[in-house]
Length: 187
Figure 1: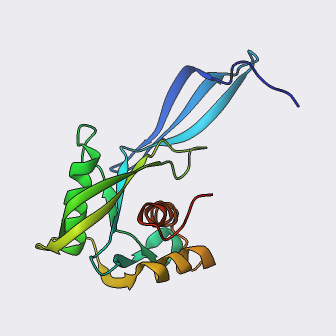
Figure 2: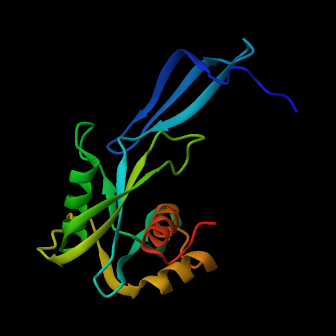
């Protein structure tokens, strides 16, 4: 098996292809670890957050939302993008949970980071478990339409493990929350 001493690729040049509201696309020429050159097409993204809000009764507040690229409604956790590069992920998580669900939380547990498509996108999601939930005022964005449902945590875990829930951030966050809450045990 070949093992490389250095795996880092060095940027030689960059060309912006698209500069959108959420996504930015570039093509870089890079120097590979062996000295050869190649190109890398990639998307840059400010980052986002995902929240697993769990009630005192062990229910998860989940969303059903139409996702245009898939042309269907999917089940996912509350989530959203950072509003700026300087916005703290926890602040974004609190804002998104309130905006999308009308729920606030007293306890926030960091579940770590998740890179949904590291091969071609810089997006990093910071995932949280939210506990101590109480009602606030839902404030959906003007172009946001979703339905909210409370589902027992074990049912959400079962839907993740069976493949019924396919959203990557939701799969990752629910499994991490399940371990944290003792629904799944690490060996």
